[in-house]
Amino acid sequence: MAHTRKSSENDSTRCDKDACADPIDPRAFGLAKAAYAVGETLDLLSIGRTSLYAAVKRGDLKCVKFGKKTLFYAADLASFLTRLRRMSEAKADRVGRTLSSSKSFERS
Image 1 (cartoon, rainbow, N blue to C red):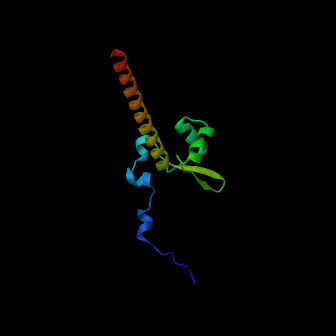
Image 2: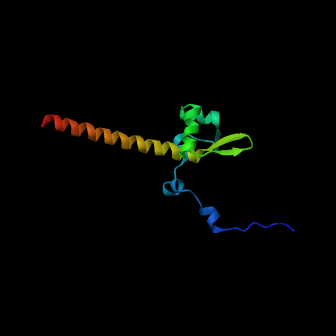
Image 3: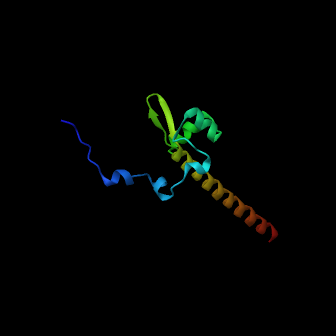
């Protein structure tokens, strides 16, 4: 007797908090493929292997295994790049405010 899979409405709507909160089109980053191997990901992000796996270990970036091959989904790469941009902009804003407040302090 064949095993039938129970279908659920939740299967199609299930996603992590980052993907649901702000859907990101990977094509906006020039990502044309659905998934990228480690070497391709290193080239796309212009980072080293150690930094890539550190991001995975921290939970900043997700990878999947297909046999022995490690893949990174384009949607996850786009989310990762978007979070990096937001963190960078927030840090620049904090630095800008700190510099402007220190200049006003010097003038007093």
